[in-house]
Length: 149
Image (tube, rainbow, N blue to C red; front, top):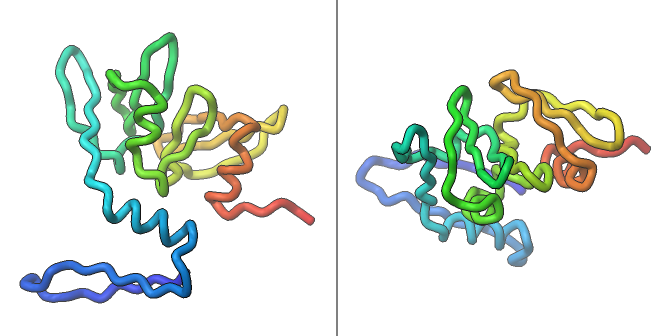
């Protein structure tokens, strides 16, 4: 898909125009994203609720019946279930990395294979997370990593 951006004056309204041969899955996903309202996402620390920007979330993890949201160096508790956050977070940016984790692909610095078909992702904050083999194919597809032939 080819993209282009044209800067306009402050007085003009922002407009998105899509030129396509047919509305395929990619175009449909883009339309869904453009039409969806921004998600208000909250995390709790010391009984205080904080409004979180999805762009600053590194990953979301379920552990011991609780859901934790990790930023660069912050950790929040969510009142929502992991599957609820998966539905609310931008699909173009977050993907299911394991049964207990959702990962922000924009925060991945590097990946490498590890034993049992899993992958290890080094994040930009230098934390390591693991992608279970069930979701490795999804990650490779998102990152454009092809298998050797």
